[in-house]
Image (cartoon, rainbow, N blue to C red; front, side, top):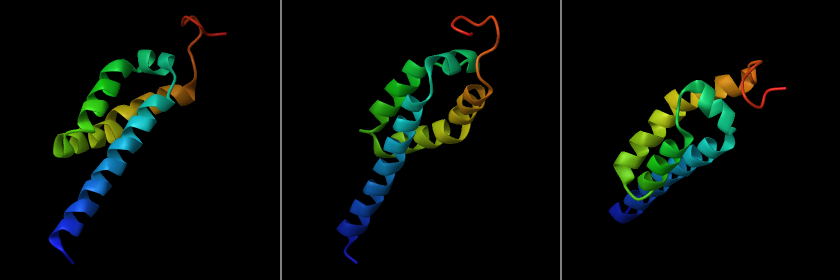
Length: 88
């Protein structure tokens, strides 16, 4: 296999992971981000910048998917606490 094809496939794999992380970031509601103590805007900016930086963006995407995303997902599944602004 040609080295350029291998490099292209590696870049495609990295891009897919980074886009997956960005779409996951956009999936959760703002209140879940607030309650989990993470900033949605910071992660969106980091992941968008990471789209243009192959290795750094991949590390950020993995960090988000396996650490931050798990916290936000857990909070979103639990729902809003009573007394939290916007809770019913």
